[in-house]
Length: 63
Image (tube, rainbow, N blue to C red; front, side, top):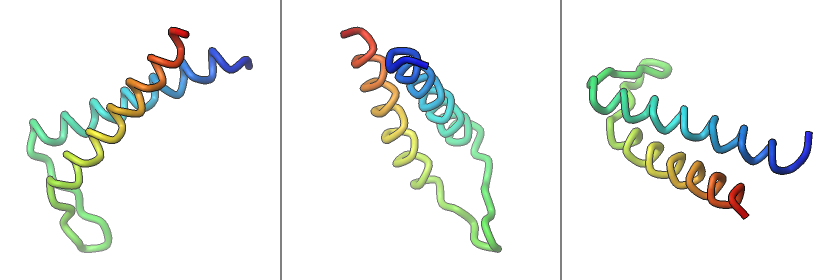
């Protein structure tokens, strides 16, 4: 696997994770980890970080 295909796959995975975070925000689904209800603010942070990483991956792939 060359670096260009690795970056493309990584950016696609980060895009999928960002979309899943967005879906959880829109649908208002709750996540319970070890009896602790994960607040929705974690999804906003997760979505922003993974969307940024996806953007950077696709941007690097253009070069």
